[in-house]
Length: 266
Image (cartoon, rainbow, N blue to C red; front, side, top):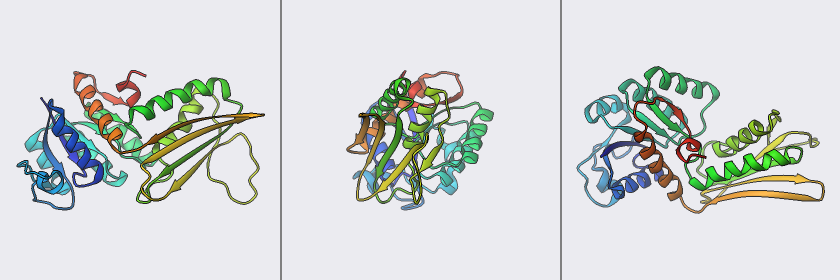
C-alpha cells in the first residue's frame, strides 16, 4: 500500500486529489496540510465524512512527515510555498509529485539541487493531464515540419490563477524550440509597434471558471494548423497525479527528477 500526504489539502486540487486517493484502493492518505481549518478532520472538512486525520499546519510539515513517513508528498499549491515544501520533503527523504507552477528560474534550480542532494525521486510537471502530455508530443512532431511557420501560443484559465503565462504554455514553447534546434525568442503578448519576426508569442487569457485551454497556432502562407487541448474539469489533473504516484513508487532506488513524459512513456 502506497502512503501519501497532500499539501493544500483544503484547496480545490488538494480536495480532488485526496478524493482520488480514497477511491484508489492501493493508496492510503496519511496526512494533509493547509493553513486553513487546522486541527479539523480532513474528511469532515472536504470530503463529507470523518477520516481520523486532522488538517496539519504547513508550519509543522517536517514533524508530521517524520511522524507519518509517507512514501510520497503531493504538492499542487503556489510556487513560494512549494519551494519550502520541497526542501522539507527532501530533508525527510520523502519522494515528491509536484504540479505547482510559477517557479522562477532560481526556484527551479533550488528545487533541483535539493532533490539531487537528497537522492529522492520526484515527478515535476506543469500539467499532469494525460491529454496535455499527448498534446505536447504532437507539438514535437508538428515542429519538425512547421519550424519556419509563424508560431503563436494562446492559453486561457480561470480568474483566480495567479501565474501567467501558464506553465503548460511555457513548456509548449520549450518543446517547440528543443525540437527545431533553434532558440526562437519567446515574447509575452504584444503592444505598440510590434512587427512580426521569428518569435514565439504567448498570450494569456484570464476569466470566469475556465479550467485550462491551450492552443498552438502554426501559420504559413495560405494555411494554418492549430493543435488544441481543453480541460473540462480538474479531474484530468488529479487522475494524472495518481498515475504519477503509482509510477514513482514503482521506480525502486532510482533517484532523480522526472516528468510526465517519463510516466507515460512518451
